[in-house]
Amino acid sequence: MPTNTRIVLASRPTGWVVPENFRIETVATPPLADGQVLVRNHWLSLDPYMRGRMNEGRSYAAAQALGETMVGGTAGEVIESRHARFHPGDLVVGYLGWQTHGVSDGSGLYKVDTAQVPLSAYLGAVGMPGVTGWYGLNRIIEPKPGETVLVSAAAGAVGSAVGQLARIAGCRAVGIAGGRDKCDYVVRELGFDACIDYKSQDVGKALKEAAPQGVDGYFENVGGEILDAVLPRMNAFGRIALCGLIAGYNAEPIPIRNPTWFLVSRLKLQGFIVSEHMELWPQALRELGAHVATGRLKYRESVAAGLENAPAAFIGLLKGQNFGKQLVRLA
Image (tube, rainbow, N blue to C red; front, side, top):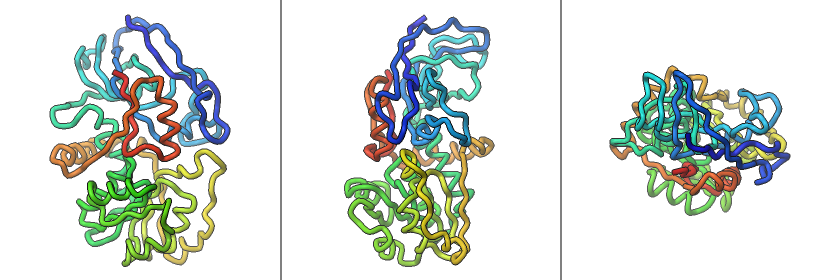
């Protein structure tokens, strides 16, 4: 059996995540029992939700255990199987964590077809980030043709999907991103109607020009000052899909300074966890896969090479240094 290299949580971060919060280990891969498969992971997904799991406090999911393999989505190849549904050579996606090899009983592991969709895309546009964007847009914002949909972190894996899907639905898509390069990409490559650079522009003032008819639906990934700037531009009965609050992940939560807008504009704000809606994943994945295969849904990847570079890539993700979906190439 091959040896397995993994990264575990060595300590819980206080404030910003640092490399010392992680530890790399080499361990033996256990023999397979009946009903198990051994997967050689080729790709590891890095996502903002992992930061919340590193804390010990109450959340929507169990905290990442100290000394255990960091949680994370993976895509790879079955190299040994004692499971009737999987065979060596099958390409699979699951949640086997920050490690080169993973053993699974088949739960949460599914085969993928790479004829039209690359394996890595099943961790991005045709995976959890894509489904997250699809669900928040279609089930919470419920866009109507002609409406304006705004999304923060628009150059990221989730936000880029939201804006493109909004355009497909006949909406005006406006993004918020950090830096001119990201904003240019969002408009020129992804087809957004406008993008605001929060690093160099006053978001509130820029929104008046980018969304002259106001904002009907807002997909929130950031929170903090960005959310405060958006609320006054929301139209009556606007809908906000709350996906993430990354601005406060490495510090104390940032309060909303003027919640009066929720009453004045009769806004709906709904948080969601996409893993609680698994019954909709097949529909979402079919639509997303078709859009990627036909080129209607574009995506970009930031790739770190080697498991040992996962901590630095994750820290960069939390600081907004990634461009598109952040991945680690493992093989």
